[in-house]
Length: 237
Image 1: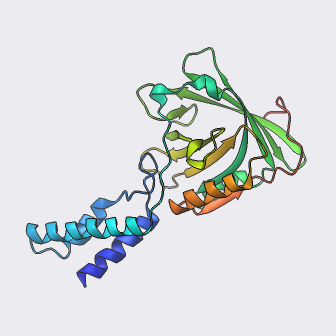
Image 2: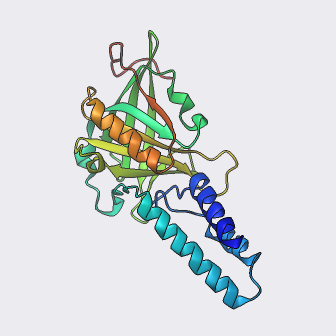
């Protein structure tokens, strides 16, 4: 029956394809639904009716399963000075295991964020502990006033968004989302949680995981932080 076909199509597409940028949790593939509707349409009027039905079912689905949306930090008005200093890498979530697999060997990572002399450039130095070994790595991000995301140096296809920790009732937290620009076969989509305090409460971490899980980020990893933090200035990776 066309009705149940549309319902199944909507639920399937909603579950498997999320918008990776500002409209987190909203379907990205309306064109596919239009195609599905068109297969049952005898003409423009029928297509319009079926499309209205799709929108109705989607609205009903959203009302039954509401997912709160995080707040994007606008780079146009971002005071980068307030983010300078030490940040602890707490947890990560992703669409797939491969999105977060590079972090699973880490025990802890401490970042130091500084503003470079070059205007609009942020320098982040990470002290990474893997087992009994320490290493360091440096990332550079450029703030472009014409873009709503950070540009990672050396990653031309990478989009880095910042989300407010207020979503987690944690003003000393920030969430960083890394996604790939354009059509990339093995595209990345992950959210990283950072906090000013390495001993972030379990309730905040669970809230972070559950809220992003509601938005489709089903793969989860929390850094154990069982060993001593590595000092800044360890041997580079």
